[in-house]
Image (cartoon, rainbow, N blue to C red; front, side, top):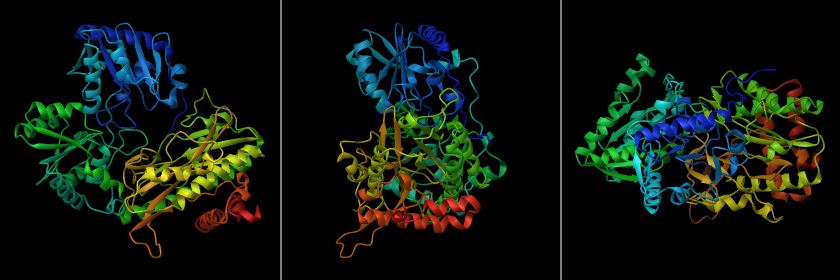
Length: 610
């Protein structure tokens, strides 16, 4: 069995470490004159994935979820988690020391207001919170008669003795054949946007935006090719890029210095102060700019203006080279996933395959392409009841066999230089029940409704979200996650600003790539999700009185026909499914042989030949 190279399955949590570490933090807080401290799962850029050196929350509480916040007071500590982690958190932390608080029931601000004592001083690191977050905490403190106090140095530096070193991943240039547009042209577009915003400069705090702007990629965090960095782009003139010079080869530095002033990270604060002292209007991204940035500019006399970084939208609208690259990546990835499903169809019925072995095999098939740079997120490999855990991550502790008569859900993705992929397939191992087939077909109907949707230019994801739910709603069913998220171009698998969800307010623009992933989850039983990536493109509508858009499906992998109840699909849905499978077969067949080619042929037959 091929071993996974880009993901691990060890559960490195240890609840026994929690009590002494919280005691050490409390001692350090007392030394600083603080009554408590807020510990978010965040780095200075609000990244989804953070470097080991920034895993403060995991080190302190032993909780390894991708989102959460701890608040440590002198006499109590709380860990706030969302619905994904209400089962995982108490299993990983020491609940004698830490109280698990579902955030849907009690927000951290409300908890602070109820638990802070009068005249308490609550500490926070302004580099790890946005200004909006800091303002919410300040209001809660004021309501309790307490004060919010920024710290000028990280208290974890004093107590985390074996802390990993900051990441030193090498930076590479993202070739023009993949990027599509040279950095010089992107900077001209950014300058135009800054002028429209009537700002004197834009502070770029999101490393994804930095990567896109300067056509660079790095390896500072897992699964997303980022280099931790900041940038300042003035309305006119050369930008400044703040990045550890140790990450740059001479050739990369030379290329970057043609378009920007390359400076060490320590110069970032000084340059912000200089901008502020000139009374400049400074645009800050409200989602990723640390409160520390806002404070530095304000204290120096500047005028920070919070709003969306215009680069985020520019990055989300893919150019022709990025679109062609994505299509090539999806064809390549489709072949790898199809080989995996073919292998799974032969191995799973033997009754000896486990969730981890499936993950290892899938990564191996992707590595066989010779072009895999990383997985785009840890693979979700859920058999039976584990498939009902939406963000399940298999560990050696939770690994279970893939049993016959069960559903197996596998949600995975890859990072290639020409594109990022994300796909979920749910397959029946053995004979599915009628209920499983009914639920799967309802999810499929929702998936097809999104794939076939025609919508006016300017429509938002919120306007489309219900399309994916109608067949489920008709049976009194639903799913609790969004229907789709944006996807980057050899960047983050979760990209803003657009998404398909009840809260998806951003307009869907031609060139955006999003996921289409409705699901259904029966707790303790099974999970179903069908996910393809789709491209927003022009819709040709006869007699249309305004521009309309639709989706082009990029993902090319068969959908399990054994789980479909044909009579539940209308003629249009059947035509879509058969057409999709024809395209999958015609694209992938030349790349497959032997048993894999035979499996593909059978898996893509018309539904009438079921």
